[in-house]
Length: 312
Image (cartoon, rainbow, N blue to C red):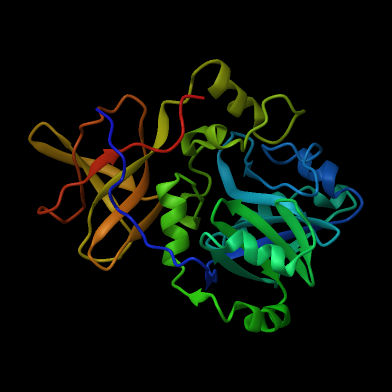
């Protein structure tokens, strides 16, 4: 029996938030396109300047070091991702860069989220472009979904944007997490680096894997998971109640007992204690399985449907 999330969030018609937990790896140089093409799951060669894509960088066994949004940025590329573990992600993706004309470094630019039904109109007012990725004074504006844009800019550009944002409500970055979680958008944080293959976090369902491009690090494992069905785990959405907004670790009910089910990939909790979490589970788990937070014997959690087909 399917169910959809009942945890809702009221977004102002126009809002902004500082995304201080997010950062980009900047990639520049004559060989940046070809170098990235041989490292990541998405197709960099076919990525035009007005579009972004999700993607991942894996080790030789297909386990992810990073999961990011990739787009053209400042005469190069940006790999925008959660800041937790980004130093390791940079170290791993630049490992073979000495053999190419490419520079990879942590970007010092800041991330600003613009949200709400008027987000498109606001971006139109500060840019001349029409695409989902647009150049602005010191960086880029990137459309994430129908009600979210990312601004990746220098700090002084943020200051110059503040007067234009005066009609936008400043809100908590928790709102950004909510939209990610309820839409099943994964991330790789430091504690989960080198743990999951891309399909475990549903990246194939989010157009983050191109199965027709040439070789890249970890491709053999990723291809085997698709064509031989070797992947036995997927990311699911859980809904429940949390007394505290701490890192969620779950248990699942097995008969009259409870067994460890793992930690959340991403999570959200509102002021009423209603909460959502993305978690990796076995593909064949029963939809009516009950869950709880480790140490909480009072509140149970249940599975709810993601807004996309994970069987792609």
